[in-house]
Amino acid sequence: MNSNPVLVQAWRGGVVESRHRGSCAVLDADGSVLWSVGDIYTPVFPRSAVKLLQALPLVASGAADALGLDDAALALACASHGGEEAHAATAAAMLRRAGLDDTALECGAHWPYFEPAARALAAAGRLPCPLHNNCSGKHAGFLCLGAHLAGDRDARGFAAGYVRREHPLMREIEHALQAATGWDLARAPCGTDGCSIPAHAIPLRQLALAFARAGSGVGLPPGMAGAARRLRQAIAKHPFLVAGSERADTLLMQALGERLCCKVGAEGMYCAALPELGLGLALKMDDGAARAAEVALAALVQALLDLDAPQAAAVAAWSPRPLVNWKGLDVGALRAADTFKAAARAAGRNMGRFAG
Image 1 (tube, rainbow, N blue to C red):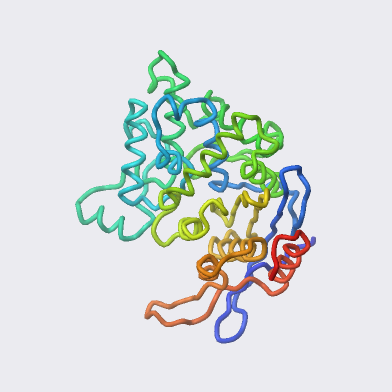
Image 2: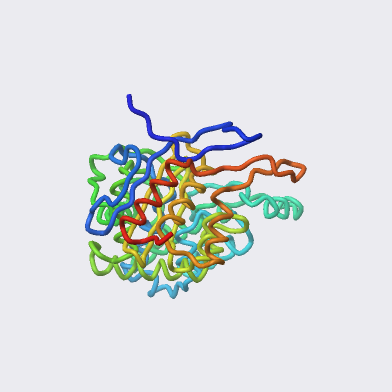
């Protein structure tokens, strides 16, 4: 059996300590594979990397406008956040717009991922609620869509059980995901995500295509094309809400603005749109390592975008990425493998995207 190539290496003491294998695809909105590494045709679970696609119906349906959702709310609808105060407060405000509260959320509760936020919550003698779940923004967006679809019906009653695949809300989300990816989800493997909604397995090729479409509008129905543009603009205005303090998605998009719309997913997934180039990319680390996925994404951004000095510095903080021990000593680094980095740069030059 052929294995995927090494994309990222962990170095310590001048030698490679660990190797992270994976695959990635770069496509344009017409469906052309401009560059790929490894297996991009076997379905994988994108997990939270497709939240932007799952938020398309919220805008395309008119629900966002009907409920007066602002850009902060739209950004949070695409988020895997750290459970900080601003994240929980924004999710609560979204629910109020729908006439609901956090008891309508079916994502479950966990402690904030951002440790200072978790410590502050514990110090106040409070337990986490569903608002602190990293997916609460996505679920609040689902419930806002549900309140809009319910019309004159009771919104809470209509939305109850919305995480089930057969629920009208999930059918809307599945339709948007299928329209963007061009993948027949009725025949795709389907599991359950960490936040309890259906998780569909989709090849990297189709995921990269979806993000090329989301970044350019090409290949999407008109309503979804406009929705994708509005969501990307909201994310660019509020990158903190998409992830949070010390998170790669937030820091990269703070530096690059609308040039990059990226989203991490569990188990080593990443999807991104490069709107100015009309490109989408998707990558998956075989071992599910998030740290390696961040390095691989940054290496691809370095290869495909012509960055100014501040942008280059922001991206270089993630590729290579220093490894620091508990005493604060620099003990090694996570680096894109030389072969992967060289191939990505060559592909960028061949596409006329990168002059370095």
